[in-house]
Image (cartoon, rainbow, N blue to C red):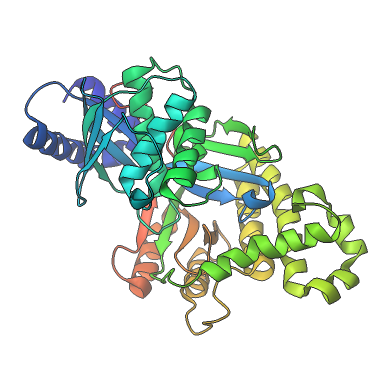
Length: 417
């Protein structure tokens, strides 16, 4: 492994993780050589993401604050001239995609091969070059955690094609849009653009979805590592099974309020509109729809305040807004537990324990879609050991994951960043 690669690894994961990540890379290289022989290779990486603000706002064309994180998918890659992409991901069967056929294949939906084919089709649709390669990938992006392992994989494939066949002509935004296209049209999963955008760009970013076709993305330069806090994601071990109706009800109820005003999405109305008509809205649509609309409208402003706090280097103000967002999700959006199963409230327990340990310091909130899964916490470093001990004690050893904000998105690891 070159000295250049070692330096990049330190920048991506932090000095404290340098040895473990170097070992991870070496194992991946050895596995690649075992599969494809001992010759030249290149190394690529794309990160998972965390949503920091804007809980359930993108589907109503709202604003989001997200960040690329240190958990990622890496690929050891060799370019080929056979027009076939072959990917062996750790723990999964090999995917082989012939680029002579870029049509949507129904039997492939839900499989990673669909994502590969979809990303290649997206590049071709934008008149970018495509071609073959062989790759071995390994990921430490937690599945089902709201860190978006699928988006990281899509962005990884796009990043590889961009480096191998396009001399970096595709922008990070275009790669994210292509990744979303692959997930929507080829994989068969409707998704917004936030996951792919945060993975592709990295760092803290705000995304304004007011114009769905051309969202406004702003990268915020903030050195999280120097603030004296650690970012933790805690897996509360709840099941996402049979929660689709709970998730679907959120955008449906929000849009029902917008429809009352003759609009398609909540982005087109104001808090004043809701308050001036609140009695009629309650009678016609129910209280929960009204509360969820108020969450959306306030959350949009919270994202702006969070972003401004980071730009101004005011981490205390930022934490205050994270807490505000979390409270709004709990009380007004109401995505902390499923109404059909009130006996299972892992997120509620996790948030309660987190608040007890934090004792007025830091911040915690639901992470991702909610109802089950993970919470997010910004923990003062002097409380970190106690935080891990308490949360792991409840949900099992290894439930609390410490991650860092990644300064870049999809890259070739031997690049200077």
